[in-house]
Length: 446
Image (cartoon, rainbow, N blue to C red; front, side):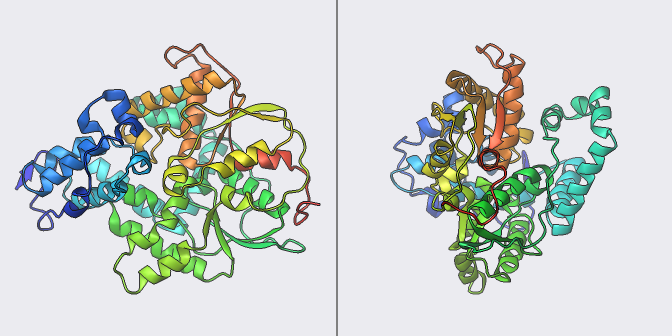
């Protein structure tokens, strides 16, 4: 049996999360928080509407295939959860439904092959991540990036990917992230989570974070065998691949004695802290996941409580875009702002609607580029209002998305906004590292 985008003869009956959908009271508090609803005003593009569709399909009143397009257009920012008075676990409904439908989904041969290589081979193993990082360096060092751009080949085949490729940072790490760094008198022992895309394309951010942690007196360790957190897999409906990543990550960090596990990516950190829900009911892995999650902190969350050495002035105007998963899932809102406000010379300006999604959504910017760009342009119009010269971020996909946004703004491609060049997009760690340049490890505050 088949229905539209699904083949329902695969893997037995469809089991959708009916019990959780019943918790929705349909009050509508989520509507104003949802970026896709705000742009479309369509009930089917709201959290309330999507929950109702899943419930209707679960109860047999709606063709299961009909719920896929609205679910695909959901960014997964989970701002609706923060607004929901009933505490409905929308993210759980979304991911459980995607996981249930993914094995039955009709995909072309090329799309299946790309997913298998990207999710299974590259992001699926630590060796694959190292290979991906090496291939990216080779791609640049041989000048293949310039060749691809000059021929316009990627732009013709995958325009959204071409836009993202064009803004990938070209930076060189100052030293390798591969060993334990020992402060003279460590205040905190940190086990550092390096991530997958973070380590491949934004390794300089990891390095900046490590230098700042060392300046705050931390001893930083890099557990062997760590890889992807599994967030990209769970968002893609690849439940078993996500659990494989989670088991590997938990085991890798159990092997080190770091008091705290630190991530610089809001999305990764949210996944790490939610591992217990991934293994709910598993007598072996749920207790291990709970012990692991209890040690996890965002970089800004930990650093906000540590003394820092005197900083040099950074003369700039900065605004900050919340990472959705850092704000809505980890509930870390004030620490990044306090850290930025602590930098001498840096004038902090609050971004209007800073908690509204930028449209990155992990791989959403590639799979749903039209909606992603609409959300991004609305965000960049707000950024332009602040007059900021630095846009601070705290998550990897957001970082890449907002680099693209800064380029679109500079080129005058944001509707209703004149071209505004010169906005740097930097992780909070990079800004602090710039202010602390030259500070010795382990020095802390006087």
